[in-house]
Length: 309
Ligand code: PPS
Image (cartoon, rainbow, N blue to C red; front, side, top):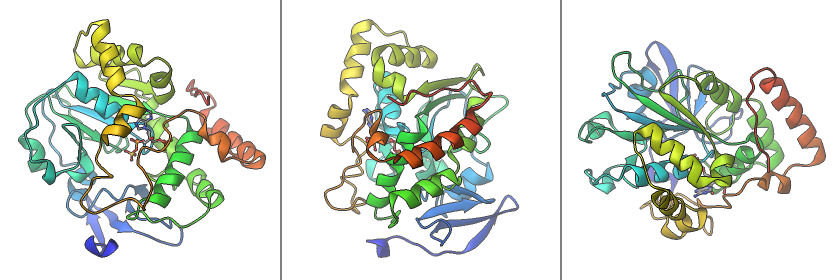
């Protein structure tokens, strides 16, 4: 399958900084994109990387970015937003990767986004310092975070199951990479804490996967209000029902499974478990102790707390 993709590993310079796309090394043994010493998902390619890493994407008034560290509920948040802001699809679906009608920034060329009507909704894994921004346009960011134990487990399964990411190591090896700041998508705490510093900004809404799981209609209501929609309770309930794990899995939302190049290993689904607390099936006592020390050292004094189920 890999032969169908272009894995030419050339170092290039973007905005004066060094980048290498879709590379796999001894230190980071799964396909990833590296820029200025940071790790990004391999979705940032030679085609899109220069725009989004180089910071040349031009925002428009009303743009909304749905932002998540990989495996934190990106698809879920995006599909919910799509239900709230139902818009007709404009682009040819074959041309870009989307959840519902909302495109994935890292895989979409800026010219493809130009034809979208305002307000444009886009989803991304970019960190705060690289996400498109504007001084003059009113741009909004909806950020979803998930507890680091479940993110590590979800990423471990994902990097093993995705052919184009191709990680062949053990859980213990992946956990070490994750804690070293080389998880799938780079440093978990680097990403989360940078966004967390902006949680009180007027144009930022900070959501948690675990809250969405526990009280979906309330959280969907908060999201809808932030986006400028006033929905009735029945409408919120209808959206919550449409966006459960079971329904999204049954409908193959996000279409990784349906993709022309089969991206997943046989028998594996993008919709794995969708629960809070699966970490209990993976962490040994020793791993958990080390992981907790690592988490506490990052979370101390931040007031950011997680529900681990
Ligand atoms: S990606 O590839 O980074 O965009 O993945 P992302 O969408 O961020 O996260 C994938 C995990 O989210 C789970 N998921 C859901 N959980 C609850 N409800 C719904 N509707 C839902 N949809 C997707 C998905 O199963 C992945 O988590 P795990 O723990 O691996 O099952």
